[in-house]
Image 1: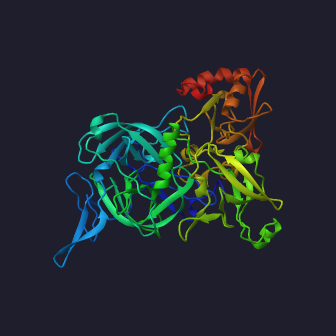
Image 2: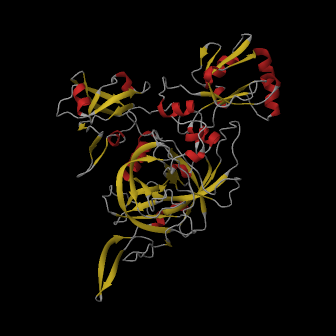
Image 3: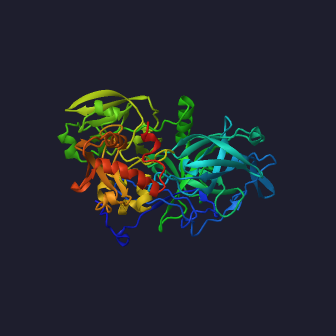
Length: 563
């Protein structure tokens, strides 16, 4: 368990996964690093994810990438075959130059919520990243490139005009956003990018975008070095991803990765920063991209990637398998816990052995076959499903094989990784500021090292607690706005509220309703660590008005609590 008083000097070395949009140098956010920061907390480890300038950026040549055969480009920007001069003859090369005119520069102005002072927003800042045109007059980029956007503009290669874009959908889990431009002039002379199949290991890839180091388009080359389930920094999820050795830096976010044939095989979205690692970049592959696009086209909005709402244990120990009644020919994984809010909770039970998913047998280590000679985590099969789809799960229970059809629904965490563009909720009474806990809130309160510095109780709920109902929230006293009415309570900070006047606090709205409608003589809040806060009801409600006025707070509660 992480100690909430742990000192920075005691932290172990950690890998750093970074999203790759570039914050404008003239941003007016005082004291911040000149690049956007995104971070998440991964169970069983503490990976801190942020952006920084690479100490030794790889050489990037605008327009082309240096290789044994220099990439050339014809007059209309489309790909063309290249050649090498050998013994006086031109030998054709297989690589095709991608249609780089489809790659655009994305300019975004962000206004982030202030989670520590939820009634206001932070000062706006700007960033630049990359994107590319696809069919249907649409543009793809990264979700973190347009997070908390107030305005998005696109600029084509070789153009001096910025076109205002409309955000159609943002997929936080997969870190993809879909944009469009209403001005028809933007689409003239631009051919959409065609998507290719999932590449094989050692296949050549070319990453195109607008990274740090210059204003013009940049091209870097490399190969696919790994294909597996990756941790997506922005979405706090695990999906299929490509690892490549092409140099991708701040500003490359949202740029396409092309194969030899000039087809797009992925979107650049994050890189690995570690003293023992160099040139490790990550790309969102086409299966994830197509899932996002088809999800939007089917439902008119982004509904997300379903997950199986269970926690499971490997069954690699032979004694463990024998004790559960598994035969020598049977393989699978054991269910440890089931999310009470998931559809699986109604049919599956702890200690069930999942043998197969949709007819695909699961190994004792939780993997399934993946292409020739490869294996991958079975969550890969789950990620292919859409909200509302069904799948057949075969389990072993009490030495009997049972089959269940499960319908997938959107999944929510007790402490969400994102609030998806909504302003944070808050409620104020007698200077006590109540709000809900989310990963952005923890980051706002404790910085990028919240995994070490946040209270142990909150970290335990973040990593291990399952919601008991779909509307359950962790409500905390964020801070106390000092006034005569709350003398003695000033030091209460980020402490969970468990009950009010004997009633369990289910979420922030229920707490606000109970306080507003309270006719008892006293308001009694029961907090974590066996603390209580008691206030006289009439005095507390009367003092709230003056406290709001003193701190220039427009309302005692956020708009979502007023409905």
